[in-house]
Amino acid sequence: MSERWNGKGVLGGPVDGPRRLAVEYPGVEALPGLSVVHRGSRFAGRVVRFEVDAVVLRGPVGSERLFRLTPGGFEVDGRAVTLTRPRPVGAAGGGRPTRTASGSVAVRGAAARVARAGRILVEGVHDAELVEKVWGDDLRVEGVVVERLDGIDGLEDVVRSFAPAAGRRLGVLVDHLVPGSKEARLAAA
Figure 1 (cartoon, helix red, strand yellow):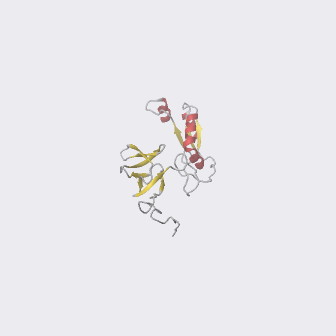
Figure 2: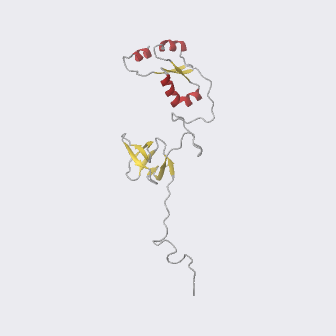
């Protein structure tokens, strides 16, 4: 009597019993500020930044610790999760709002508003570039213009000619504003 092997004999399945199913943990995008608990150490903190294959958490007293990204290695709201890197700003999918460089919610499809009577005065080119890089998207939506002073010496005349009032707001960004400095005296005037 010859029987063909059908794979269902003694060695037809795993030798050590039923196959274990891998536990799957939901992925959570680790946005800066997200409150998490590292399950292995019970260290609780907020996400600060990512390293190559790890996340940095800041605890309640300001200490920072680095933790490897492992499946199910963290808790968010009491449930085990796998932290994932945040998607780049403007990444598609998920229906989540995108963020501007300053971290505020981006207004999708909004064109730059015509300049209103609001200004931010900055000392020079580097200050204007910094404001543009961080707050440019936000300021365009609000219709706020950034103007270079090319030095602070003429600040008093520029403020006087702008004539700030309830509907005409003015902000000034000045470096080295320390008591007794030229910048402090001009800003006070």
